[in-house]
Length: 223
Image 1: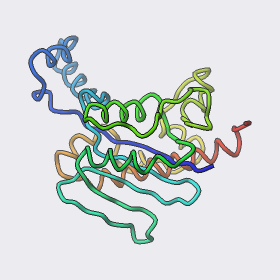
Image 2: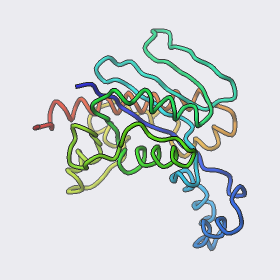
Image 3: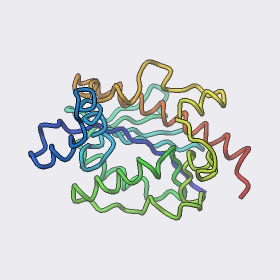
């Protein structure tokens, strides 16, 4: 079976980029400055209010990875050991390349991919007029097609959910969140032009998710 770990990073569009009706809708329940700020931060969570800035893919069997990311300059570079390809493009370009690259794989591996990454990729592509090459939202209880590790470690909602950082630390895996960057920092980093740093951060998530997948496969996969 061929398999690929995927992970994305997103940033919300500026609140002022929405027309008055949509802006009022998005801020409908924000009655204080703190609530307004919280509502604006949450724009990055939805494909109707945010864009994909990074799409990462890693083969857990070969450890080869590809990270597609938005940046003004068109670059196509490899890491020193040749194991990771970093390639830039506009959002439609990286989406189209992702759909081309992901098509041959039998199994998709994610962490909370059913709740975020996969519907985001599919809906964002549709908004931009790009047809996905495959359905990432397959039958929930078939991990052979899409193994969402958050679903597996909670036994499909039977026990409490924790974030990737918490699971990594629990299993003794180096957490990418322990190196000074979290998802809350990405909006500011993108505005500052720190595109490659965001791509490297995404690679850390891919590596951690792949290692977490190995723990699940070795100890909890009874198929």
